[in-house]
Image (cartoon, rainbow over all chains, first blue to last red):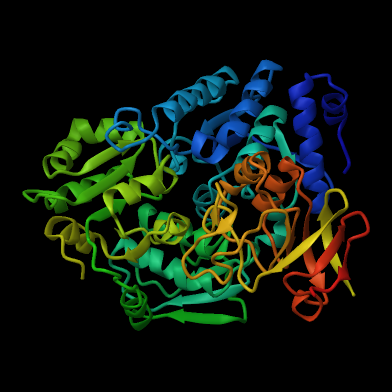
Amino acid sequence: MELTSEEQAILGGGRGEAAQRALRYQIEVGKFWGAKRFVPVTNVHMMGDIEVMGDAGLAWLKAEAGSGARCVVGTTTNARCMDFAHCERMGQDAGEAVKEKEIIATLRRMDVVTTDTCINYQTVYQPHLGEHVAWGDTGTVIYANSVFGARSNFEAGPAALAAALTGRTPEYGFHLDEHRKGTFAVELKAELDDLADWGAVGKLVGESHQNYYAVPVFHGCRRAPAADELKHLGAALASYGSMGMFHFVGVTPEAPSILPDEKMVVSDADLAAVYRNYKLGDGDARLVVFSGPQQSLFEMKHLALLFKDKKVKAGSTCIVTTNSAILQQSRDLGYAKALEDAGVTILEGVCFYILQNLSPMREKNRWTNMVSNSAKIVNIIGAHRFNTILRRTADCVAIACSGVLR
Amino acid sequence: MIIQVQRAFGPVVEGEAVVSEEGFSPRYDLDRWTGMITKPGHKLEGTSIVDKICFFPTAKGGIAAGWAFYDIKWKKIAPKAFIFGVTNPVMVQGAVFAGIPITEGWSPHPREAVKTGDWVRVDPARKLIEVLRRKT
């Protein structure tokens, strides 16, 4: 890779050993992908919690902080695995909670802003067209590339942290024009009335085109989608298809005026088949989750309306996750109270699928199914041996309150 | 028998091959305490990847994979190498961070060259994989 004089200085140890190690690591990753150089980044969003990092990751992080690792650009954290106010009731390990607090303290020492959110693009930082950033999780990256026209690859925790320490990332993938062109067209003929429908589109398109560099171009939608709809679409495309970017004609800034040759259509019948094809297993309807990504303020408002004057069925669990800022506003606006009065558990700063101790939690509660309106979470929780079922938002609420799976 | 790969990282390693027809994510598919593929319905469900040379056609989802490789390496349940048809940046960032060899792109396709149980050598610097011994 070609290095600037500043990068050579970092490599020579001029900005400390942590930055030196980070740049060496970034060079190896860049070489793998054939990157010719680095690009400066303005913002970093990183995943780092005890569930994903484990003891090894924590020990590594503490050593890095001890050797002077400090962020040189604005750096925020993704959703984590524990809401300390709920971890005892949720059956999470006290010992792991101590480690989670150590991670948070260590990251803060390194100048990381611990926002604990996977919807930073809705609540914390909105990059502009062409802005280079280094973000993870995948849902944040696809939103940045697609909706803002910013430029990021999927950056795993260690890679994002390296970018935070050096202020740059190797130039490959979505930092380059050549990978940002649409590769196939998707005509949206379906009604798409619910967030789950948008996730289902992401599932259909992602599953059939699993490739990081596949870039779908959506067209034919009869109305402008809202931010939460694009969020569920993007999160599902990234999850099922490992995709990092989409275009949406008339909506996203880099959408092409000429469609690619390869074409597919998503119809109402296709969506109906998605819902129909989930196996209901033993019919267990005792776990309903609104998470993955965290809920926006408008999602909280909508859920509060749907749960008004209702109660989660005795013996059932309904979990909503959001970040601290949205939860505070939801408290001020009465949405949180409406949900809690209905018996919903609101978890702050976490995402359901990365909750520490989730498999034992499933066993203890004898949950077999998980019902959600998020196509992403329905896809990613499989290793915890849940049978998962995607349903529309109002249907999820009805299932939570009736205990009957439909 | 030799498989040429397009991109590669890591030292030379040898081990027993596990050839999958389905893609992989250490978060979606793997039990990160035993090294077994546990996702219900995965084509390798019930298979251990510990100390294996793993051939996967695709990578799935997940930023969290970046820490997972380091975690499983430390727990001594990591594979010896990941051989992908098509991968994504997270797998590469995670493997490089953990020091696990990883490659992308293959010719010929492993289904024509290697079977689960064969003993193979991965040579990232030369961008090739050799089948040393057939499963007996």
